[in-house]
Amino acid sequence: MATRTATSIMPFSITAKLQDYHQLVKTRLTITVVLSAVLGFLIAANGSTNFQDLWALIFGGFLVVASSNGLNQIIEKDFDKLMVRTNNRPVATNRMTITEAAIFSAACGIIGVYILGSFLNGISGWLGVFALLSYAFLYTPLKRISPIAVFVGAFPGAIPPLLGWAAATGTIGWGGWALFAIQFIWQFPHFWAIAWVLDDDYKRAGYRLLPSKVGKDKKSAVFTILYIAVLIPVSALPYLLGITGWVSLIIAIVAGLLFLQQGIKFHKSCTTKDAKRLMFYSIIYNPLVLLAFVLDKL
Image (cartoon, one colour):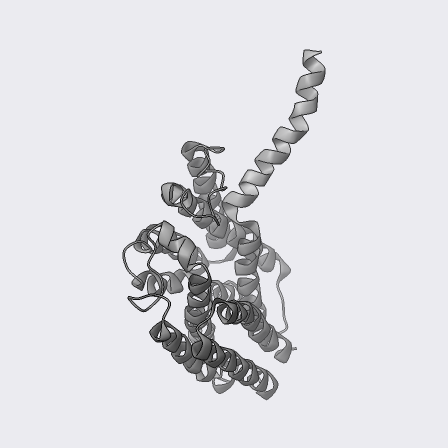
C-alpha cells in the first residue's frame, strides 16, 4: 500500500517542482529576451550563420537570463508576497527555499557565462556578466527607491541584441551599439505602459516606476510619447550605418509612427485600457523591427 501511494504521488511532485522552476526562471520572458539576442546575431551574421555559435548563444543566454530572474525573486521574496501578480511565485510561497533557488540561479549564471565566454568570445562573456549583475543587484533593489530604476534596468535590458552582435562578430562595433540603442529607448514606453497597468499592484510592494512623482498622470504619459518619438529616428541607425536596406527602414519608421499614434491616444485618455493597448503594441514592435532588419539582410 505504501509503495503504491508513493508511486502515485511522485508524478505530481515532479510536475509541481518543474512548474516551480518554470516560474522561477520566467520561461516565457526568458525566451523573449533570448529571441532578441538571436535576432541581433542573425543581423550581424549577414546571411552566413554559424549554427554552433548560435546554439551557444541560445543556451548560454537562456541560462544567464534564467539566473537573473531567479536572483530577482530571491531578493524580492517579501515584496512578491504583497502583489497579486507575484504572490504565487515559488520562493514567495516557500514552496522553494532561498537556498535551493540561490544554488540553482548561481549554477545557471556560472554555466551560462562560461558558455558565452568559452564557446563564443570574451566580449560575449563579459556582456553576460554585466547584464546579470546589473539586473539583479542594481535594478532590482532600486525599484523601491526611485523611478531611476527604469533607466538603470534599461542597460541590462538592451544587452541581448548587442550580445547577439558580439557573438556573431567577436566585436561590438557601431552596428551592435545601434541595436543596443533601439532596444534601450524602446524599453521606456514599454515598461511605463506595464507600470501604468500594474500601478496598484506595484504600490502594494512600494515600487516607484512611473516617471512622474504622482504616478498615473499626464506627465507620465508625456514622457512615454517623448521616448517613442526619439525611438523613430534611432530605429533608422542600422540603415544610416549601411547595415540594413530601405525596406526595413520603411517598416521601422511606419511601426514607430503607429507606436507614436498609440502613445498619443494613451496620452489623451490616460486610461488603463489604452495603456494596455500601448503595452501590447510595444511587445509586437520590438521583435517586428528586429525581424525586419534580419529579413532585409537575406
